[in-house]
Amino acid sequence: MTLSKAEIVNLLNDTAGQANLLQKADKIRQQYVGDEVHLRGLIEFSNICRNNCMYCGIRKDNKLLHRYRMSPDELVETARKAAEMGFKTLVMQSGEDMFFSQKVMCDIIEKVKKFDVALTLSIGERSYDDYKAFREAGADRYLMRIETTDKELYHRLDPNMSWQHRHECLLMIKELGYELGSGIMVGLPNQSIESIAEDLIYLKEIGIDMAGIGPFIPHPQTPLKDEAGGTLDLALRTMAVMRIMMPDINIPATTAMESLHPQGRIMALRGGANVVMPNVTEGEYRRFYELYPGKICVDDTPLHCKSCVGMKIMSIGRTIGQGYGGHNGKLPIKKI
Ligand code: SAM
Ligand code: FES
Image 1 (cartoon, helix red, strand yellow):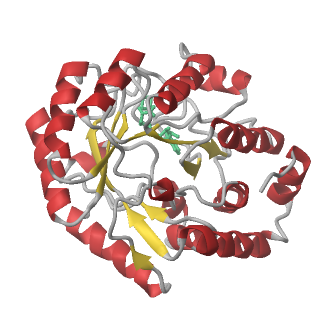
Image 2: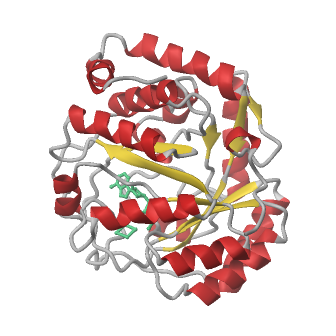
């Protein structure tokens, strides 16, 4: 459905109408993508990053953070175990860690694709040549949030980065035939409701296949530590409006939502979401991939997370998707 900026702003501001909005998004979700919830096993394989995003707990200047990097073999082994546990999609995410060169990454992708999984990469801004090589090696999806379309805000929060470049990366990824995931944070300092409305229009215009909407949660070891942060309610309303605007895309119930409220992901699944990304990273690493404080499940095991999420999903009468869970059943995408 096409909504004007004014209509989006009204919906986002309407706190009294939130329950109705989420109910409407839930109905649309059921009608267009059904009751299946797709699980994506998330592997956080390196918290080393060359960037310094003001909001992010793993930014380069956070000297208090213990840094880690899985070896390529360890990453492939983690992926193998997750596939064995039944995940049909894996998401490999990291900071912008250039140890994972084009060659290293392609080698990992080729090995992981042998496990019969759809593979999402979420490793930030790279060259066209890299994105192309990753696709050729077998990567199916790419996830990179635009964070905000307010360029002034973006440049204040992501020093030395260029909004235009991030935007162009998303276009390249799309052109190369990946399923494209993007999204935003809500509740960034000085982010207006109008700008969130513009973000949603932007995501629709570039034709994303997946949209992640998460509240910004201030991290104590970042320059934004004293900011208020985003609320779960605004994140839920934003997500619900996204579902109304793009009825058949994949929308995750984000981890950041559950970090603000023990039922955050369930509330999201009842308000338009149809994807959950349980963490399948093992051991100590989970604790060190601390984008924001209070991140859930840092002491759990992959198996525990999978069964806990599964039970929550079934407790609200939904089923767990058994396929790759692509947008419009598009997957598996052919290699290029
Ligand atoms: N490096 C990759 C990239 O830039 O896309 C992936 C990793 S990055 C840490 C993943 C996402 O975490 C970001 O796109 C951002 O939206 C989110 N994030 C970072 N810091 C956050 C915070 N303090 N609160 C909520 N979300 C945060
Ligand atoms: Fe690089 Fe956050 S600053 S992942």
